[in-house]
Image (cartoon, rainbow, N blue to C red; front, side, top):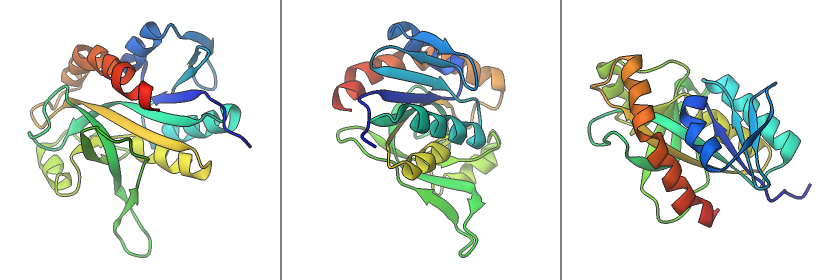
Length: 205
């Protein structure tokens, strides 16, 4: 089946997506099974938090709309202090820290598609929020950032032979161990993240 010209965006929460919905003048077209916002060229789906939700939303997008590409966008935690709050990274490798391969015992690895010219980082995706500084330090051996959706989006896109681009902004560091800190930081940096996407990413998709 030939791919459509639509770009699909998968985001976990409306908290992260609000500047995209407003800035792109997206209109809500459905509420179930996932909230969906659209214009002529973009569809944005709110998956909910976690791997299963992200996988289902991605599969739904691929199956129903057959987009040219899917962009997974949103917040991520930094594993150490070398990735400051608000910094934006293009993900070039994803490690599933909590899902080892059956044959080797090593974490599953996923490779999303890459656009040239962006600051890159390695992402760890897990189903549990990682707030403990010691656990972040352990993950930092293999990954720069932590989220709860990226690996599932990349894996689902591969099933449909759909290009997958992932961009994340830093919403928390080892100094931010409270949910309210993360929410505040997302609100602080989400508009700049949207402006970055519109100015630099959309023209090269």
